[in-house]
Image (cartoon, rainbow, N blue to C red; front, side, top):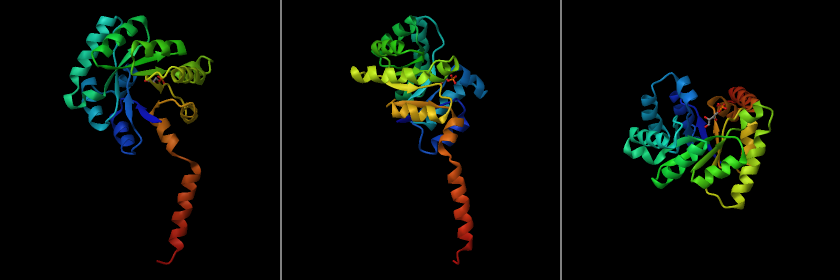
Length: 219
Ligand code: E4P
């Protein structure tokens, strides 16, 4: 399973990428705003740190505007990193039109704000490289988010659909385990949760004991 980091915080991306567990990055307007840094600066840096798909979100509403925006985002990234540019397109009829055209032009897309298996199916049919079902936001409104991952995986396997499933809006480490057990291709995970995934209290206790016992050994 691939792990993407769901943040625009460059320090976090640098640190967690150094662990050797980050395969890509997803950003969105909220995450970019939260980083407090200019978008141009973020774009230039992220691609240098992670060699994998990096999602940048288009914020237009009409298909033609999304396409223009996608091309302008691609042009902002230096040529050697362009293979990794992925444009996040919202799951709307206009978004689907944009995905179809961008695919023809060889620009990768990640259809975002997906909340049902039908939306995922349409995104895949339109030619999305990735589809991002937001499970945490479904949990937030009292719907079992992971249920749609199960449905999407079943449908994508039934029809050999190549679009990769990015489980998004992850709220805790168990979400990642469940997504992996269902065979989802990718989980995009916030830095705080990546840190929780790496830790276990018994590991800490074990290290402390080994360090203490080692002090007792004659060297
Ligand atoms: C994914 O690409 C999104 O950036 C993200 O997972 C949204 O998560 P949220 O529901 O916590 O905002």
